[in-house]
Image 1 (cartoon, rainbow, N blue to C red):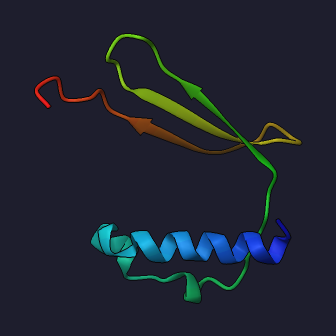
Image 2 (tube, rainbow, N blue to C red):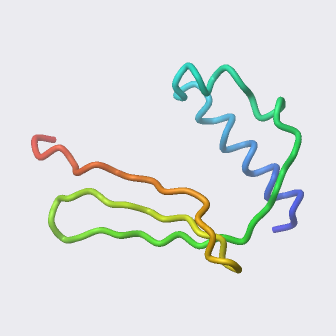
Length: 79
């Protein structure tokens, strides 16, 4: 994908989740954030066979700089 296509896809994804965002995040839109930076990234997922949830670490592919961390809690055993 081109840089323009990547930005368009990111905006499309954000628009889909906007209604589910917490109030503080819904107060600002991607349209109010005109500076865009595209990074080549890797996602490293840490999990186990036990129901302990998972952690994903997003890092810049070239420098190893941390971009973000995401945590998914364990699944509810009663579902």
